[in-house]
Each structure stands twice: as C-alpha cells, then as structure tokens.
Amino acid sequence: MASKKILITGAAGFIGHHLANKLRSEGHTVIGVDNFDHPCGAPAQCVHMDVRDPALKELIKDVDEVYHLAAQIHVDRSYEDPELTYDVNVGGTKNVLDACKEYNKTMLLASSVEVYGSAKTPAISEDHPLHPQSPYAESKRQAEELCKEYARKYGVKVKIMRSFNTYGPYQNSEIYGSVIPIFVRRILNGEPPVIFGSGIQTRDFMHISDALNAYELMITKGPIGEPTHFGTGSEISINELADVLINLIGKKMRPVYSAPRPDEVMRLRANITKAESLGFKPAMALEQGLKHYVEWFMKHRLGDSANVPSGLYLKE
Ligand SMILES: NC(=O)c1ccc[n+]([C@@H]2O[C@H](COP(=O)([O-])OP(=O)(O)OC[C@H]3O[C@@H](n4cnc5c(N)ncnc54)[C@H](O)[C@@H]3O)[C@@H](O)[C@H]2O)c1
Image 1: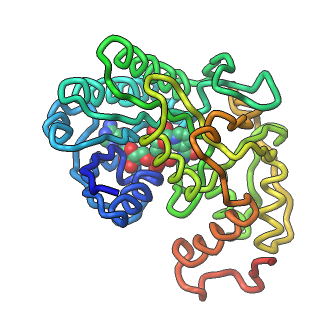
Image 2: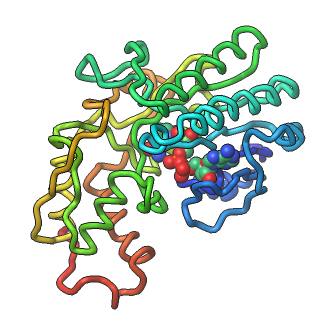
C-alpha cells in the first residue's frame, strides 16, 4: 500500500490514538490534532490545536485524507454543556469540511449510533428513523447533515461512519468515562457497579481492533455522503454486562441501582449488512475482548501486581 499523509483530529483520545498508532505502523505519516480536553492518557504525538481553529486548514492543506474524531463525546456532559457540545461537534465539523472542500481532501466523520435513539426494530439498519435523545446525539445528527450537504453541493468526498459502542485499552474510566471502564475500575476496587435504571437497556459493544478495521474499510471503500454503521450484530443488557465482568474478575458482589438517566437510549443492536458488503467481519467475541481489557486494566491502570486485590484472578 502506498504511504499516505493523514490528519487525525482527536488523536489524543481513545480511538484516535489507536488509529494513529495503527496507521503509523503501516508506514503512513500521521499528523495528530487535539486540544487535550479529554485525552485518554496514552502517549500522543499531537499538534495542540482546537478543531474549531481556522489555522487547522493549513495542516489539512498538506495531507491526503482526514479522519475527524475530535468531539465532546459524553452524553451526560452534553446535558450540562450543550453549547460546547454543539460548538465543537457541529462547528468543528464545519471547520474540517471547509478545509476539505477548499483543498479537495477525502474526509471521514466519526458519527455515532446515538443518532437513532432507542431501536424501533430488533436490529438497526442505516435507514432506521433518527430520533436523537440527547444534545450529544443531536450534535452528531447535525454534523452528519453538514457532511451530506457538502458532499451533495460541493462534491466533498466525505464518508459518514456511525460506530456502535467501542471499547478497549485506554478508554477513559474517570469522570465522563464509558460503562465498561467504569464498571471494571469499580469491581477491581471492590465497589459494586452502579446501574442507572433497570439495567435492561442493551448495547452492541465492538472491540477497538474491529473498530480500526472498520475505519480502514470506510475510508477506502465507504460510500460518499451517506452513513454506514459498524457494530457486531449482537447485544447485551447492562445487567448482563455487569454479571459477566463480576464473574470474569472473580468477585462476589451484586450491582447497585440508581435513578434512570434522562431519555436514555434503551436498545441498540446493529444490522451490519451494509458494513459486511464492504468486507467488514467483526472478529473479537465480547467475553474475550472484555478479558483482554481487564488484563490490560490490571497491568496499566492499577499499577503493579502489588496493587491488585488479593485473590483476584481471571476465569478462563
Ligand atoms: N467510543 C465510542 O464508543 C464511540 C462510539 C461512537 C462514536 N464515537 C466517536 O468517535 C470519536 C472518538 O471517540 P473516543 O471514544 O475516542 O473519544 P475521546 O473523548 O477519547 O476522544 C476525543 C478526543 O477529542 C478531543 N477533543 C475534544 N474537543 C476538542 C476540540 N475542541 N478540539 C480538538 N480536540 C478536541 C479530546 O481531547 C479527545 O482526545 C468521537 O467523535 C465519538 O463521538 C465513539
């Protein structure tokens, strides 16, 4: 494969840093951009720049393609600060689109399945109606609309990738983290996972290794100006997820329950027919991916083995 020059916004984040490492390992030159608002903690080679900064276009001018991942990604924070969420997620996307339009660059928008809202059908396909249920989800819908408009009106080669929940090493477990890292941290610390609402809400969790393959397929073969989504095609409830993690870590505890979140999406499972037509085939089974993740977490986020609670083991 010919070596390319690639710009990644959000390259200090969970997915961005994995993507940058993968592309560099394949021989490409990667320019990372991030304002370090929510970095994942992995070492990151990045230009410190806001995605809304007009100077971004000078960096985009010299690359072959752009993966646009920078975003305010947290649903809870989007209720606390909707202005910031729209400004970064919609305004930032416009800034990237304008530069890609001016310099005729291929671009990928990292959108989210949150745009669908709770599934009205057992599995969601790309033509499922959009019912964004949070400012975050609505900001992603608006960012997608901008991409469609730029593709239609100006011929910008923009690919719209909707990912289902992605997990793996370096996903943030602190405030504004995601469910798997937060549960793992709590269980390893001997604290029960906290479930908001009944726990019957389901998600389709995709391992980062599968997500990285999806990104590559999408930038090379993805259709222009229309969304394609990537997940595993399986769902698990948050109750089941908590049980799997408690068992995997080998603790004796039960989750505790808290008030439901406002407007939480209750069901998400991907119909991946369209992704499969591009060659996508998710390879990491959830339990295997969770086991790898817990092992990574114990090694890198709990410090050395002296900090691991005694009696802790991972069931095969
Ligand atoms: N992780 C998932 O499950 C998931 C699912 C669907 C879609 N996505 C999308 O994928 C992308 C990456 O997600 P992630 O999980 O790696 O999130 P993340 O929060 O780990 O990474 C986002 C990065 O963007 C940076 N950023 C935020 N505001 C910025 C700004 N104004 N200027 C420059 N950089 C800024 C943050 O500092 C962070 O490093 C996001 O667009 C997200 O919406 C993620």
